[in-house]
Amino acid sequence: MVQALRVVVVVVVILGLAWATLSGAISGPPTYADPLTSSGWQTVGAGNFTYLSGPVTGEDYIQGNYSVENPPGAPLTLEVFNSTDFPDFAAHAPAIPLLVINGSAEPFAFAAPYTDTYYFVFVNSFAPSTGIDLHVFVSTAYESNVVVD
Image (cartoon, rainbow, N blue to C red; front, side, top):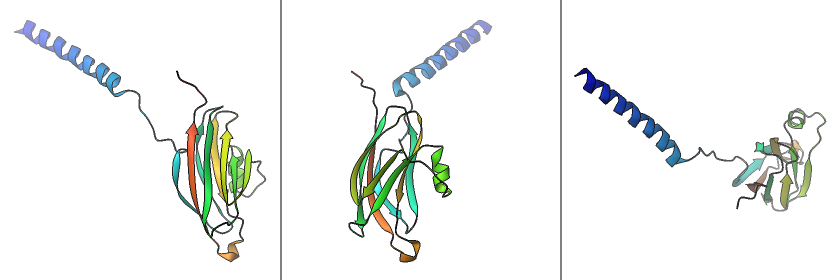
């Protein structure tokens, strides 16, 4: 009876290890939604800003476009900051953007010079007293610089 119990324990352990190994191999590596691949509406309050952010591996790039839909043709500024300069920008201190684009409907492409968290900041330059909020459609895609054959 003890010998049969030992055999059962060994078989159960072998089956458990086989299941743990095969289930990981079958399901593949975990995947996560990329915050810099998105498409949707952003509202930028008068005299304010909104942003998209996420990690970007060095030499990869983000491409996309934006279009101010309401009020049509209103000016908007896109600025890209790294993780060092964004807190300064948010605190209204001097900050150096890595990319600046002005216009109401513009395509953009940003190649990350190094691995970091980058902030794509949409700035409404209308004075807060005007109450002119901008409704912007933004579409972005994270593109890897690695070519896989």
